[in-house]
Length: 633
Image 1 (cartoon, rainbow, N blue to C red):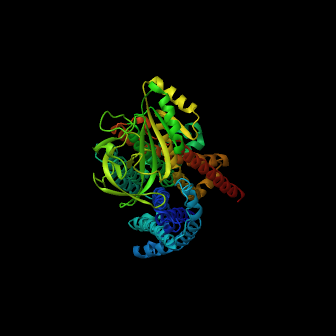
Image 2: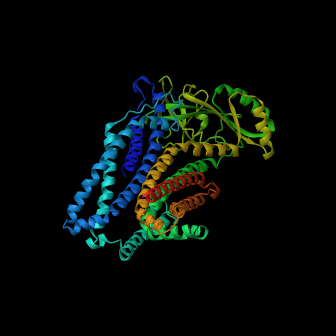
Image 3: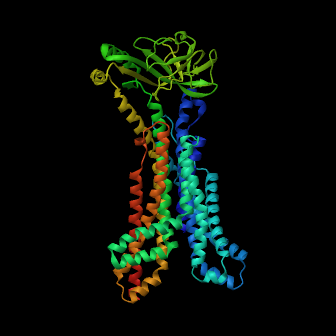
């Protein structure tokens, strides 16, 4: 138990240290030495760190709470005879509670201290693991994490509360049983009463989960999915003994039919020892349910948000470059295509700082092949004036996106370039940016003579509409054949696919969550297997003494562990399917194809297979070693 608590504290403390380092912007250096625009841009990676680490802390925290509570409860239940003797000898319930809390507090505190200290030491390499996905490389800022003792203390306090809460709940449950009841095995009447209680708790959770996931309620997609995941996790944990009992009985038929004697013994043991089966299956089903459900929800949020932004895209060919030097050559190439191009708009974009409200925003310069479009016939890839007129743009004038509600016509806005030079401009128009172009939010739009190109992160983006579907291929070949350096040419479908893949691949930082959750599940799984096998030592020895072969006993133990782990995986599959089905329904409701619904089959199979292999290997080694020593005696 101490090892599991130590590892849990280590992972929780290290990720919490990363979160606080992101909040406090460790490594950003002396802010006063940076110009305004660079300072604002430098804050973006820190916001990414906070977002990613928040997810990791939440996931690891949930896994820790559920598994620590279950593990501590299992250990306390294993000592029910000892508590019964204490009660028979006159010890009061309160005295037993205080004694056990003090007894468990010392080793748990030591394990938590070691884990929190190790987590603080490993926080620096953990921060390096987060820095890449948070886009620190190339930002000009180094994420130099500083270990905070206050975070170490907070992590220690949190884990101690969870551990002692588990001890208190388990002893409180045993104190309700009579002394003679504690001395005997748990009665069928008591198990039936507990089963009814779990049904009473689980049924409302199931109904509430189904309501949140499938009822037509007005909730944002992200909030709805996150709430559903939390409810599904609580439902699985509350109903775990009932679900495991049914799953074990079902899956146990396979070894019973295929492995004859050892298979029959494995199924009988798994069905009779429901507490042991639940202890082995619980780490598997909880880590798979929590990690894979969160992964599916985050991927769904990325895909759904990107698809809603990308679907209205009208351009047939999208050309992008990170240097303005390519503009003239690109413009000439598009003009030479003649009738194959129905319309084209070329934008140059930069990042500028804005004063009051402070922030970094995109400034765009639109250079359509026919000049800026006014209030007349509008191309689908050109901005549309909602208020005012684009013809009013010029020196001292700027247009603002209609998504920015901070400005109205006639307002003054101050933009700051990379040299901290300020430009006070008047809002001359409110524009609607071209639809379906996430790289072109067009926070501000300037004419060629309005603002100099003095910002950061310059890019050129061309949106080209073909005169016919057959002309798309000719346009792409012509632009690629022009040999323009650093130019990327994509069709509409390729552009959308790349954007979706980038959104999913940017979530590779969640691998910290997957690895951490899997490591916790492995430790808890090994602990549960060791406790379950230790309880079977006497029974295994008697079987060996009456003539049952060592191979049959070991094989039955391996089959039993395999059935329990597969039962946990089966329960997790059902829970994840509920989440995925709710996501597919939500996609359909907002007009997206259910084909875009993310199904994290790869991570599920990888984590499940790893837990199965480790569990079976541990059972094989421990069972064989126990029987070998028994034979020697």
